[in-house]
Amino acid sequence: MYYCRFIFSLFIFFTFFNNSLQAKDRRPNILFILTDDQGPQTLSCYGNTVCQTPNIDLLAKSGMVIERAYHMGSMSGAVCSPSRTMIMSGRTLWNLPPRGKKYLKQEEGVNPEEEILNNTLPAIFNRAGYETFRTCKKGNSYSLANAQFQIVKDKTSRKAGEEDGSQWHSRQVIEYLDKHTDQGTSKPFFIYFGFSHPHDERWGVNRLLKKYHVSNVKSPPTDINPGAPSLPFSWLPEHPFHHGHPDLRDEVRVPGVMRSRTEATVRNELGREYACIENIDIQIGLVVKKLKEMNELDNTYIFFTSDHGIAVGRHGLMGKQNLYEHSWRVPFIASGPGIKPGTRAEGNSYLLDVLPTLCDLTSVPIPETAQGKSLKPVLNGQSKTVRQVLYGAYCGGTKPGMRAVRKGDWKLIKYDVLNGEVRKTQLFNLKNNPNELLLEHHKKEVVGKTNNQPQKSQVNLAALPKYSAKLAEMESLLLEEMIRLGDPYRLWDQL
Image (cartoon, rainbow, N blue to C red; front, side):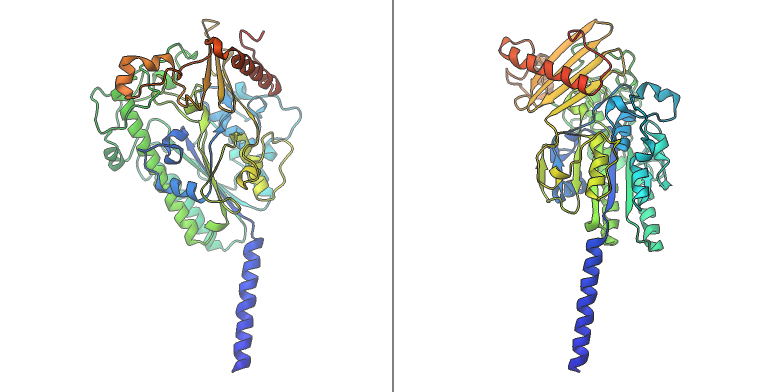
């Protein structure tokens, strides 16, 4: 009897030991979640107190929140196109590869004899032995690279139903995971889980629209629902000068908004945005639950981000074609093996850092074509940032367009548009003025609607003699970054 117990004990020990080794040796999975047109200001982990996202909140608590994550910019009104190409290729804005469609020619950059297509995310992880799966919206991306995923389930789903809303995207992931389990494959998986929302037309699910006291509309509303989300502190009835992109679709033709920036319109649109985001959160919860049921959650890196932010009434703007923080910055959350729960870091990252980061975390060689930096030192708590200076550009309209540079708490934005008609400079201290408030935000009629009385110092500081030295420093820094990154344009006072 004693001998039998001893043998059984040895069997249990070696089984446990062998399973532990196998678990340790298993390569981690990747779940990369990407939303469309979502700024960090929509999430509670970045300070939002209205939009409810319990599953994204849990993701943030289980991992790290990056405070300063950005898309680098765009030379196209469809900001998502270069942004998503940067994610897929790890290339900077002015070095994007050809993508095989004529209408994207303007976005192609300098690529001296480099084989970039075979070094995109799906190609890299296919070679590394991963099973790669993708569901996302169609269009405005790197279509040649998208096709390299082994399984592709793409469809633009911007309505509210099971077949045309965010539910469709989550169902594709869950069905894929069911098949992955049924096949019993030992391959790790790379899932690119993209949503078509909260991009307009922000068609929300009825019960969530009711929750935020808003309605799906085709034309701007005239009545204010007192239960709708409040106006953001940086709301303006119009931008103080032209943004430089005449007839820009996102500023003049968004269904339910058009040119309206009234309180009724903006509050209704914010509620619709929140309804779409909460629905996304529900879908993420279903996928995470599935991973847990499969015993794969602890062995999966989960990343959550967006292709860019968006204004939705802030600064009198509605679109993403600007370089204010609400549109230039993106949410960025990561959890998984080795990432300490409940942590935050500045990061100073770009979306083009995604590719080298995913490679580094999974011990896959980073291709030489990647120009981004791995965030692994930040995610593992070894460093707070991967760079000191951040650069942004928008020139999808009149040239040379807008440029921005940020270092620490200081940020510079310059506008050179409409053939020299608009030439403006803005200087902000983001610690003191995080919403980039302007003199126009101090007007009585604006304060009366936002219920926010700005401090006297919360203005554009560029014209104040007190800050002339800081302005000169930031101007010089911007030009250095433009030269370093191969920006083909120069602003009026850089010639």
